Amino acid sequence: MRFEEALKLYELELFELGERANKIRREYHGNKVFYNRNRHINPTNICVDRCLFCGFSAHRKNPNPYTMSIDEIVQTAIGAKERGAKEVHIVGAHNKSLGLEWYFDMFKAVKEAAPDIHLKAMTAAEVEFLARTYKKSFDYILDRMIESGVDSMPGGGAEIFDESLRRTICGGKVKSADWLTIHELWHKRGRKSNASMLFGHTESRGHRVDHLLRLRSLQEKTNGFNALIPLLYQTKNNFLKIDRALDAEEILKTVAISRIILDNVPHIKAYWVGLTPNLAIVAQEFGADDMDGTIERESINSAAGAQSAAGVSEKSLRDLIANAGFVPIERDSMYNEAL
Ligand code: V47
Image 1: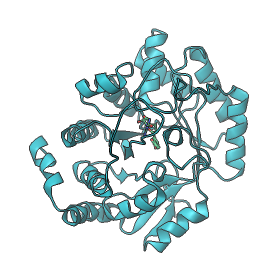
Image 2: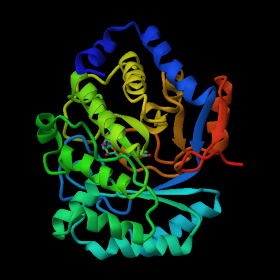
Image 3: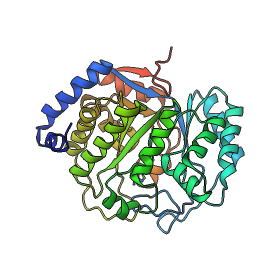
Image 4: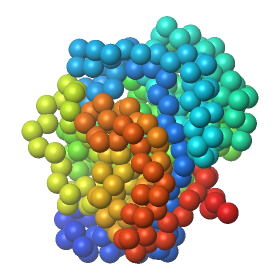
C-alpha cells in the first residue's frame, strides 16, 4: 500500500472506514474477542532517558524512584501465577545501576520459580540500552535473553518512527531503524514479538501512516509480529504540553487504519488500559480483536493519568465482551485458545 493511498483512508467517513476494518477483522477472527490472564511487572522507574511523554520515569514530575529486588520480582510472578496468570510482562526504565547480568539473573530466577509461565520481556528500547551501555551487539543481548528464559518480546519503545519527531520527544532512546532491526533479529531466531505505536500527542496522521507502513514492510519480511498495539497517549504528569486529547472518532479511525494497513499482522490490540474498557470494546467493531489482559497492576499508563493501576478482573473483562455481542476467548501469549 502506498503512503498517499493509506493517508487518504483518514478522509473516509468513520463508519465506512470501520466497516472496511471490521471485514478484515472478521475474516481473521469472526466474532471472537481475545484476552489473557497476565501480570505486568515494571522492575524500576529510574531512567537515563527523558522521553517527554513519559510520566512513569522518576523525575521532578514523578519524584518517587523505586527498584524492585530480584526476589520481589520472583515473588510477584509466583503470586500472579497462583492467581491464574499465564504470562508475566516485564519491562522497565533504563537504569544503569542494575548492571547487565542483573537482567539475565532476574529472568532465570523468574523462569526457575514459575517454569510454565510465559515470559514476555524487554522492549527493543531496553535491548538497545543494554547493548549501548555494556558495549555488546544486539545479537549478544537477544541470545542471552533466550538463554535466560525470555519467550517473546513486547511492542514497547516504538513510539513513532519519524526520525525528526522522535528526536524531539524521545531523542535519547533507541533509533527507529534499530528498533526495527532488533525485532527482525528476534524474528530470525524463530521468536514472536508485538509492535506498538504511541499516538495522540504531537504526531500527524502522516506520521502514523508512515509508522504503520514501516511495520508492514518488516512483517512482509519476517512474519514475526503477533499484534500491533496502538497506544493512546495519556496526558498527565509528563513534559509534553497537549491542549486537547484526541477525540473518539480520531482514535477509532486510527485503530481501523491500523487494521487495514497491517492486514498482514494477525491481531490488533485495543489496550483497555489506555483507551478505557468502554472505548476498547467499541474498538472491537473497528478492527481490533483483543483487549489485552487482567494485568493486575499497571504503572506506565497509570503514571500518566490512566485509571488502570489495579488491573481488571477476568469476570468483568468477559462480561464486557459478551455484553457487547462478542465471544470472549481466553488466549495464551501466542494466541492459542485456552482449553
Ligand atoms: O513504549 C509511555 C508507552 C509503552 C505514555 O506488547 C505511554 O503486548 C501512553 O508497550 N501515554 C510501554 N503510553 C507499554 C507497551 C505495551 C503495553 C501493553 C501491551 C504491550 C504488548 C506493550 O508505554 C512505551 C510507551 O510508548 N507510554 N508514556 C503515556 N504518557
